[in-house]
Image (cartoon, one colour):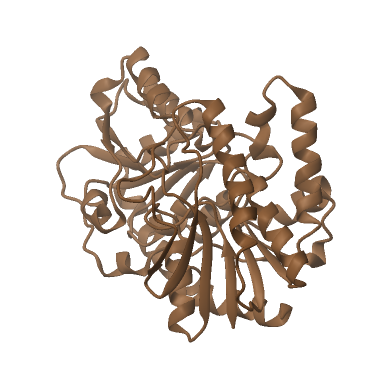
Length: 391
C-alpha cells in the first residue's frame, strides 16, 4: 500500500507519528509524509532545516513545507497554523505519485486536515483522520472573548470531520462528543488508542529510597494540561508531608506555571528539569516514586503520556475527566480524581506518602494493561486493518 500522511509535526519534533510511519514501512508499505519545517516547541526553525524540502528518514519520504515558525506569541502561532495549511496545499499539488489512501494525523488546530481533504478529493482517494484533538473545544483560544471567531472555527470543525471518510479517535469519549458537537455519525468513527514507545519496557526505572516522596509530571506543558491542579494540591499537601514534584518537559504554559509556583511559595517543592529526548527519559523516571497526570476541566482526551506512564511500572495519580480517568481507575494502575479537583488529588498523594505499600501493585497492573492494549505492534495491526477496510 502507498500511503500519504499529512501532519504539521514530524521528526525531529517529538510526536508518536515518528514511531508509526517507519513501522508501516517495515511491514512492506510505502509512506510519504507532508509536514512543516520543525519548530516545535522552541518556536524557531531548527538549525539546518531552513532549506530542506525533501529527505528520507527511516525509510519514510518526507516533503517539508516552508512555514512561519510558532514564535512566542499568539499572533505568530496563529500565522504558523495557517502558513502550514496553505503551504501544504501548494506543495501537495506538485505530488505526482499514485497513492492508495490519505491519512491526516490531526492535532491542534483542525485546520491542518484541510490540505489532506483537498488532496484526497482531487485524487479521488479515501481519507482517514486520526483524531487526537478535541475540536472545536481545543480551538477556543482562537476565539477567546470573540464568539464570532469561535463559531467560524466550530463550523469548520464540523465541515472538516464530515469530509473525511473515516475517523479514528484516541478516546472513546470522542465518539459521543463528535456525534453531538460535529454531527459525525457514530458508525463513521472507530476507537484507536495511542501507543507508547516499547523500549521503555526494557529500561530500569526503579527509584531509590531517599526518604522523600517524589512525584513527576512528564510531557508537554500547555494550558490544557491542567497543571494548576498539581500546584494547588501541593500547596495543601505541604503542611504535613515530605515530598517533591518534578516537572519534566517544556511548553507554552511553563513560564506561567513557574510564576504560580513562586507566588505560592512552593519553590522548595518543585524541580523544573526542562525537556529531554525520549531516549534519556528512563533516567528521569528513576527520580519518581509516582507519576502525575492532569487535564483542564472539559478536556476528555486520553493523553499519550498515560500509556507511557504505564511502561514505567509506577503508580499514577491523576485529576482529569473522560476515558483517561476511566482507564486509570478501571485498571488499578493508580487513582484518578475529577479534573480540577485539587482537594482529592491532594488526599490521594498524601495517602501514597503515608501508605506506599498499598500502591505497590499499581505499577504491575499498568504494565499488564499496556502490553495487552498499547504496544506499537498492536497499534499498527489495528491501524493497517482500518486502512485495508477503507481501501
